[in-house]
Structures are given as C-alpha cells and as structure tokens.
Image (cartoon, rainbow, N blue to C red; front, side):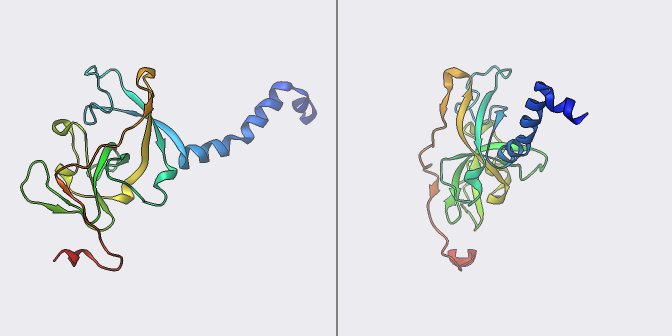
Length: 181
C-alpha cells in the first residue's frame, strides 16, 4: 500500500504540502495574518464608506508585539477589556506615564505602568478608553500595519500625530505609580 501511495503523484504532493502545515500554523499564530475590521469606530481610517456591508481587510503584525514596545499613534488589535470574547481595533493615544484628558470628562487620567490609552478614530461611535479607562498592554495581539482590501486603499496604516489631550511623561524603572505624587 505504501508503494502505491508513493507512486501516486497527487499523494506525494499532498504529503509535501502537509509537511508545511505546522510552519504555516505557527506563522499565522505568531507572525503575520489578516483580519476584517468591522464597525464604524475607526472611520475614516478603516471602513470609510458608510455602507456597513463593505469591510476593510488589514494585515496584522503579531511579531511586533512580542517586546511590548508600542508607539503613540499606532493602530492595534486587542482583547476588549470589557468583553474577553471580543477583539477590538483601536489607536494607541497614550502610553504609561502619560496624562490624558478623556473626551467625556474634565478629570485627567494618568496611564499606569504596563497600560495604554486607546481610542477609535470616530470618537462618537467607539467603545474605548473613554468608556473603560486604561487598558493593559498585555491585551494587545497585533499591530495593524497595512490595508489589504479594498485594492483602491491598499497601503500602510498611517500613524496619527499626538493628540492635544495627551501630555507625555514617563515612568522611571523601579518607581511605581505614586511617582506622580
């Protein structure tokens, strides 16, 4: 039976392809993959057309999150802090040590160590840090690096300039949150 299987050209090709399956699974789980962005919270960056039947497809870079180095203005996918079964796409507005003035409050918020402040580009259609507060960076899955679909919008995802509601700061290593006084 094995000799018949070896002599069949289709079986040989299938076995060679099957050998690459673990590599492909590892690459998709830990390297690059794609995702569909749903909803209006990231308009006009994603899904700028108000027709909700069309959704942007984006490239996710999972390697970029392994060292937990993020920059203000980057778009990321993350587990929702309020619904662990949901993955959300948001823009990083502030990082640990920064101070943010939320959209719906006059009280400033200091971003604690290991956290970030994320917002959707369309503030009035977004459930983001203005709703749930700071988010642990450990919830971030990937950086969104490119728009793949539709072809007319193919290209890199632009970083946004720093919001005027953010005052940059830093947390010195070994000094906890009470560093702020």
